[in-house]
Length: 253
Image (cartoon, rainbow, N blue to C red; front, side, top):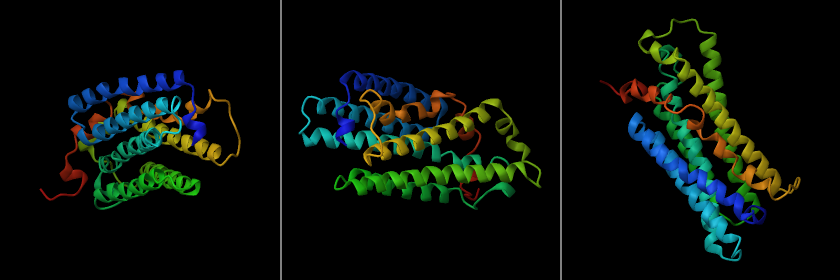
């Protein structure tokens, strides 16, 4: 991890400022659009990123300090995982608005359980700084989770495009809106960027290739550009505002 801790202070400061600036914006969006779980995960992710970059700044002046290194590891590794967790949270909502016959599973809560379990394992492996193989295993679990989400959504999209049933008209004002479609594209783009970050960092850590110092922070912070609301602020709120937990998670009325 030394290659990532010894990044020019200017680059760290820029990313630190951007992540910090997104925090109040995200809190405002959560209050305005009433998307508490989604924005709570993103807010915690951004706070962790800020702490991680503070730790990385101190590593440039006091590299042997283990406390700064742990702060850097937790912040910059947990942040991207929680950004992914926020995106996974939309899947149960998206898969119910077209009609019950298009649902992939009977209860959307199962999606949350599966992704949360994988995320916990990814957090544990990426936090345990005992060996490079363990860290890479954490990246592999995170990549598996991202791919699972992407594959599940693409299968759902395929099933929807080859449908033999009539779409549920109750929520047509959501799934026919341009902003809703834009957000789904943004969510998939975010997942792909998170995957690219994992692949790039894993290759660097495995010493498959080397890059100049000024390129390294871009790869390590590639997930900054995966922040979903950077693409279309507010469009995802429609998913939550029109769907309650009774519909999404199959709770009896």
